[in-house]
Length: 439
Image (cartoon, rainbow, N blue to C red; front, side, top):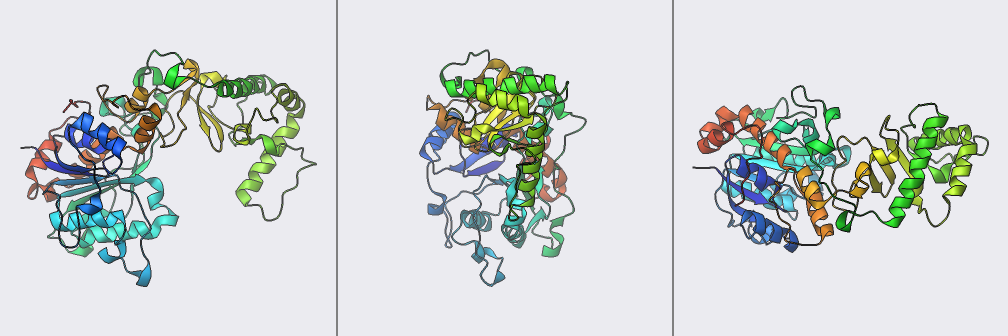
């Protein structure tokens, strides 16, 4: 018999993909977004549309018994009234619903995923509350966050060429241990490449792989995007000549802040980091003023053709000689260029990566591959913008699969008595999750 899992805040099923590939059977899933729930049902065969707060309360819950609770949950601030860190403090948040299910059903494993900032200084209180409430329920869990990204995994282990560092919380139920013994010295995974894998060797063409598409339809660049790239491409190429093969500086270039050293004036109230960038931009402009002025005039850089965010440029492509040879993101903070190895994280807003050598944007199928979804995965003909958004919100299948395997291996002896089917299924699974089959 396979182990049973529930998929909370299910999205389009990133956790479902990972846990089913490990031999699990989904016995309950819940997702409030109608479009995402429709994609989930199409691919995994489960109608998950609903609100988790309707299915759990102080009195009980309708969620069935399960071995693994998985959730890519939204993080909300908890009350700090009286500095309480028990279950009551989380009331009114979506984490409270998770905690209530854990309290009623006592799954052997809890696997949570969130953005890296959850364990940052601004959310320290939330992090400590989550860890302490899990221990109150009898779970072993590390004080140190488990941070992992799919680009740390080699392709043969389900890795993908995407920098997507996320927090994973792996908690194993150990009801016999005293609360003071429920901490772990180390997290189940560390933020570093696995084995001897070198993330710098990712190749989008072969490892994703890229599709043989032209820039049309959903992947087409707009006339404005082409114009901005052509302008900055000339900038990159000419700077390569002027600087005699030296790469562009790694700090962000802020065109609206280009003044000579003599003209530079930085108010005393300017934050230190910003003052540093302003000085660097001034030095850069002063050194290359003649070329920059000619280039800016040619491309009407300070006209309406360039909105302020496109007058900012960040070069992270090292020795790549042309911008069209790089991959790019049109970000609110500027155009960012990287080597065509691994891509920046998919996000749930319109920042779809541009594949310079293909002169087009990443397709939906390529974005799905980037998150570890199999090629049979369908978005039911919905708008591409909705599919990109759903993928940007999704859990990466390969990363979740790896974290789950590592966690069960770490706590095999603790879990054997509570969920033997879970241990057998996970420990006998292969290293690569791409044994996924259509439900």
